[in-house]
Length: 380
Image (cartoon, rainbow, N blue to C red; front, side, top):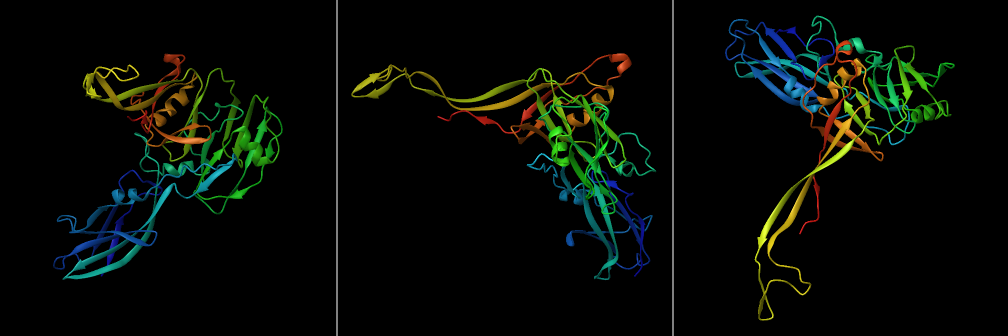
């Protein structure tokens, strides 16, 4: 009984791509021969797939993606305390095991070869070098495609940005912050898992350092993890009521974007009515109205379901940020922050068009955001 594993998914494969496993066996000519692929999640057998050999290749190809994807869960888990190391964990991937086996002559042979794999929660760009490890190139870096030199935040707002550390637990990470070009200050380090969601807002940074290193009068500050890439955050002077969205980006990180121009709320009602008679019999009399002179005739509404839409408008954008916000429009997981709570919403805008600075000059983004739950008016 000799199983040979001919192909497995590439290093740091996407959970949302195909995950092909190809196996061959020296016993493939046995009667009623089948390849057996057992899929394990957390040491539990979740699927057993049996495949006949390909009539030409004499091997079998198994795509585990649709099975493994079922075990991905959201890892947007913001800390109730505003602090820089807001959340860390290994939820950005699904760990799974393939145990290769075979069956012939009515006998099942399992676990002949066992290999462990990971699939990460990102999706590939349209064009990339498919011979290279795309996702691994973000190891030890901010997990975002936004313009890292132009982040804006109000003094009391939150600002999430993610970080990838595939090499855990061998690396301790900490933040280094410089305010308005001042001395670079180094905070304490801690060991983290593969995914860290930072809050790099002034309140979170001050909590992390244990003192007010970022005053409300700041102009800008820079933040970096250890000695890696720097992000630059500017103070935002808000002219209107802002609306903040937190969303799952293309790389599997969570980003924050705040819409700072005129934002409006719209509601659409879905009414259900019934028709009542223009007369009512009471006290041996047919009457058109009651003792309060309320008329009986006409339609009566017994249910109004309100659909709430927020029409959001961003401030002027850099070319990089406009292209990055395509990920917000296409994101399957978006939250609207209100009074410290995170409300799931869906994006009502489905189209995005690339902007080029030399051609389009100045531009911003207007977005429709649908509140995920309908609001009931009073039932009657």
